[in-house]
Length: 351
Ligand code: NAD
Ligand code: UDP
Image (cartoon, rainbow, N blue to C red):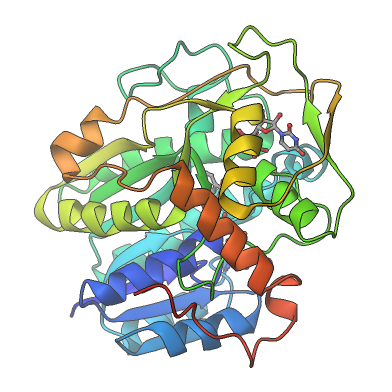
């Protein structure tokens, strides 16, 4: 009984978690409805992983498929990444976001209860701190005051999980509050593959670099920061994935619900990111200054002390690796998973 279920395991973060779980010697089963991913991710994961991986195509809101997965696969722990994540879209489709993110989580914890599974790691977000929180964000701050349905959905699930753990003393839950995950696996085989025009900074820069987009718009240079552009706590997706392995260890040895920031503790501006990407890739990124993007906060970063103390985790990879790995992924897969799926090979320079 040591199989881990990763919901949303074919997505950007989930796929990197699957690899790290395999390296830690765990059996993995994935449940994903392919709403924002491709089956090719599964084939690539199978080619990369040292352990066998099972995949079920299905929705976390479907209790029948959950019951099948949990009973057929002897699952002992769940990492719950499945959900919708586009902040702007969440304001246009709030009901869809609450259905996937909140109702989906409810169906999952109910299925876990029925199957007697006590260990859960949840993909939360730094957005739960809300728009008025002082920086750096620390877990003892009050949460809430979120400004969009996506953020509110993460905040609601954290509250639900706390209540569930209070009512069932054997339950053990870690809500991991991600800061800004970027980068890709150093093999160049898996990475972020946004559909349509990327919302996020790094995927946009990477698409400019391969010539898919003409130039980057830098959203605002009049913020109260050192160079006027927004600052964020960017962390390598492989570091983030390793944080899940540590969190899994924690939930197996503790009870109750705890939240942990996963970030580097350092803030980097948009202009610094452009420069770091150019240095790592050798490609010039044309950009122009555009108006501020509504809803953007000037600067936030993590106090990651709690994760270091309780999980034994800290981010080890720096900006250089984040940029080099983003570039390797994007240049080897200019059209993401939709192209050259069969021909893609790991980068031989990476162990
Ligand atoms: P992603 O969209 O790449 O991955 C999510 C995966 O879940 C996709 O494969 C999608 O097909 C699947 N999915 C969506 N709804 C589902 C459902 N109802 N049933 C089954 N599968 C479903 O996103 P990601 O960047 O890998 O994010 C993973 C999790 O981390 C999400 O919950 C997201 O909100 C959270 N998160 C992401 C970031 C980020 O910057 N990427 C930051 C903070 C938190
Ligand atoms: N950003 C930008 N141009 C883009 C996308 C993002 O200048 O095309 C900026 C954005 O204003 C923010 C930072 O990059 O300051 C990180 O944005 P992202 O959407 O990646 O993450 P989040 O808003 O979730 O922190």
